Image 1: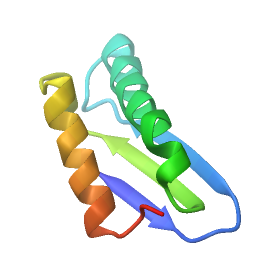
Image 2: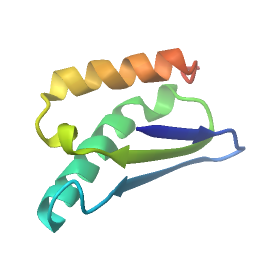
Image 3: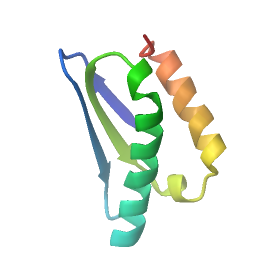
Length: 80
């Protein structure tokens, strides 16, 4: 899940609730989201990005997740 708000600075936050799993699972989910964001950060518009990790992120493949995030960014027209 992604929340976006226009801003002059580019900021990001990564959140995972206890529904995702124990601390190790939550940290892994946030690391995966952070890695995908860093890959695309230079191509994204300025703004505040809040990524909320769900349980499915731990079970999905890296390439599948990458395609999903690309489609989300394109749908929201966040690429520069």
